[in-house]
Length: 375
Image (cartoon, rainbow, N blue to C red):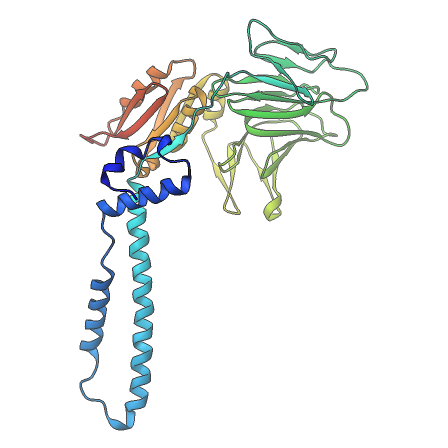
């Protein structure tokens, strides 16, 4: 059983081991602070309004018909009352959710290094400046910043998977000369040589592609929800787990396929496609964001706060918490060097007139300024 005294334990993971128990405790505490809407009072108001509108005398010849009509009206109004009740409850719960703290990003644990899988249960660290382990294939050039497969030759084709952690990006030159810049917390799987009818790679996370031209062999980026097909062009693919996937075209032409709804969309430069709730949305965007992140900057132009905080949490590998969900829709114009320290980023966030950012160890808490003054 939970009471107000238990409030201080809600953020203590040792207090409970079951997510459901945590939810029930939070709901119980909310009910003590915010009483449920009075269903009985609302129902009595409805009944009173019904009674005052009924005729005082009913002719005998129409009695049965009137009783049926009254029953129908009462039944209909009862249904309306139930609907009103549901709406009241949902609105009450929605208000509590809007005012409830939200975890935006959870930091990764352990050592954060760029790695490359070269076979079953074999993994090489690529980002360690003290010890960079080479790929066993001849012709592969590896540094702590880049892996170049453009010189690989021979009959043997192997698959490689490069994984970036939070806070690090990595550049890959594929066998055909295509350049790929992987963003933080991403995974790219590709063959050491391309053969056949297409050049197929698999992405989870975000990467910027500068595709080498080859009209006879299209380049295809496969993600969980969408495939992007190009002959030679530049585009950005963002497909993190738990987020709506999107493809943004910088130069050339690409065709994006969404298998779930059997839809293909041809993009022009400056267009972006997003897939959400079984629908695709195509819009014109400021491509400067994608040029900036690959050059080492965060560039957010009129972007929702939740997206800004997620990207910051992913890059700096810090926990991000926000005071209430209603703040997530605030839109920001925000530019900062990705090489800047997290303290400088927090300082910049505090420069907004309506935001307060507080760093405590590896957690950044975002709240609304008490003396809120909108720009």
